Each structure stands twice: as C-alpha cells, then as structure tokens.
Image (cartoon, rainbow, N blue to C red; front, side):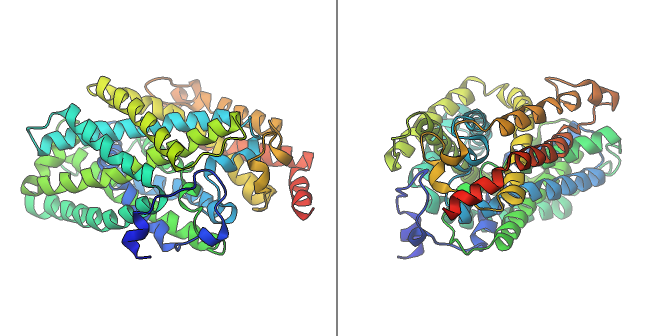
Length: 465
C-alpha cells in the first residue's frame, strides 16, 4: 500500500486495543505530527501574551517561552511511550489509575478542553479566511474551517499523520520566511528592544503559559502513538515527541512575542499582517491550512474521549468508525455554535476558562506518569480497561480520586488568572506557580498511597496469572 493510499484509508478501530499486526510507523512520525500541529495562529497569539499581557521585553519573553516549553514538554513527551506499549487511547489508559467510573470526571473535562481549543481555532481560522478573501465573512470562514477539519477525525489516524508531515514542511518554511521578512525586509521599530521590562510576575507568568501549553497536550499523546510497533522504544518516542512539540511551539511563540514587541496595540493578527506586508497572504493561507492539523487532532481526540465516556456507561458497546464519525459531527456542531455565537468575545473569555481547565490537568498528568513509570513500570492488564467492572482496577480507585482532588485544592491559593487569583498568587504580585505546586504535591502523595496499598504488585500478579 502506497503512502497516499494508507493516508486515505478509513480507520476502523476507535478505542479498542490495536492488534500487533496493525502496528506501523516510526518514532520519526511523532516529530512531524507535533511540529506541524503547533505552527498556527493560536500558538503565535499565545506567545504574544508574554509581551502584551505579562509586559516582558522581547529578550526576556523569548527566554521565558523557551524555558516554559522545554520544561512542559517533558511531561507531555513522557506519555508518548504509553501508546506503543498498551495500544489504547490515553483516556482509556486512564482507567488503569482511576478505575472505570473514576476516570469519567477526567474524561469529561478533557472533552470540554478539546471542544474549547477547537472552537478557539475555528474563530481564528474564520478571521484569517475573511482577511484573505474579503468576500467571505467570518461566520462563513468558521463554517468552512470546521467542515474541512472534521475529515481528519472521520478518516482517522493515518490521514492526520500524513497531513501533519506535509504541513510541517509548509508551515516551517513560511514561519522562517516570516521571521526573515519582519527582521530584514520590513525592519524592526527603533523602540523594539525598549518595550517591556523584566518582572518576576511577568517572567513566571510567561513560563507558566508556555509550560501549560505543553501539558495540555498530555491527554493527546497516546492517541497518536498507539499504532506504533510495540518495540518502538520509550526513548525514541520520548525525544521525537519532545523536540517536535517543543520546537514547533517555541518558534511561533517567539514570533508572537516579536510581533507583540513591534506593534502599539494588542491585535496580533493585524500586527502580523502589517509586519509581513506583501508576504502576508502566503503567511495567512499556509497558517490557516496548518490550523486544520490542530483542529483535526482536537476533534479526533475529542471523539475518542466521547466514545470512551459512552463505552464506560454501556460496556457491551463496541464503537467503530461510524460511531467516531457521528461523535465528530456532534462535537463539530457544538464547537461551531460556540465559535459563531461568541466570535466577538469568545477568545478572551474562553482563554481564561481554558487556563483554569488546564490547572485540573496537572494533577491528572502527575498521577498518570507516576503510576505508569514508578508504580506499574509500564505493565498493565489492558483487558481490564475494557471490562464493565474495571477488572483489577475496579470501578473507582479511591487513592487516585482523592489525590486528584488534593492536587486541585493545593493549587487554588496559587491560581493567577483574570477569573480568579488565589491569596498566595496575590502575595507574589500575581506570579502563577500553581502547576508547579500541583506536580510537587500530587506526585509523591499518589506514589506512597498506591505503594502502601500494593497496587503495583497486584497488577503484576494479575499479568503473571
């Protein structure tokens, strides 16, 4: 089968374990799927926050964005090894820590996150299309972007990987051209290096937003490695995912910081268009096409999570490609409604909500990684994931649920967002350390809780039997 034929092949599996004879691909594919996914307008705008919101100079903004992405990508990439080993989506594997019903809270929150990111990209995509083609209004652009994005979720895994490979080259080249054009053709304004200053609050805020950007990908990762051969290896999978996602995020974020330091206002989309001048149509066309990769990933992962939620409630249900397509269309309609109804103010409000939502992912990723690497050492009874009673993992794993709740509670004093700022964050002049506190507290508490109950030994004995 040729590469093009494989890409257009309809994926029949959904949340079921992938058989060994269906495994294919190499760790190299993980670099392009994460590199190509991140080069989009939402990443650029996120990077610009380091200057426009956190008030840093360009140099310190770039340093903060690099540090945040490199640190956050560690946690994201550690999930990469789980897919080839277990062959199931990330949210199905979460049953191994929380139990079948205990995992539903996390799965539900993750579905909301997918829809939110998808709707955010639809708004930006609609605005970009309207800017490129004046005869198309923003709403029409949103709808066109949504319809084009759903194809990836319907055809599935191979099409998304193939599209990401192509867009990695296209978006990477255009991003390089944008840097060159702004610096050498348009030129940086005289005040470029004078705008902003170094503050502890701004530096920590920018580091946090970059780190949380990476951690937000943690629920995605195994969905795009579960078809990899079982002998892919944890180390190659880690580094391919790590460098793909970190470099693919750092470059557009630094571009966003550069744009933010060049313009007077906070309209980064208009600022990028002005700074790239004659290159702007090419930049926005390619970035809009590149956005389809992230959109397809959001709706694909959202569909798998929705099917995981449904299969937990109805264990005898065995969803196939048709169910994934139906879930994708339903999620598309929800995201379109959010994007169209809130296109004028949605991005600002939902960005605040997403930031709070990401806080609840921090204790989940701590529990998942500690359990996989330090407790179970990668050995799980995959058959138990699909059982109505949760198999050896039960319906609810109380220590995991309690540690998860604790991980959220200890972060609250350190929250720093327009929606809510905790007393500890206020005492530190708005510096956001919540995600660090969540990781530091949740990880050891969960480890000692499950070791005390002998959960790891229990799982190993079940596998040996």
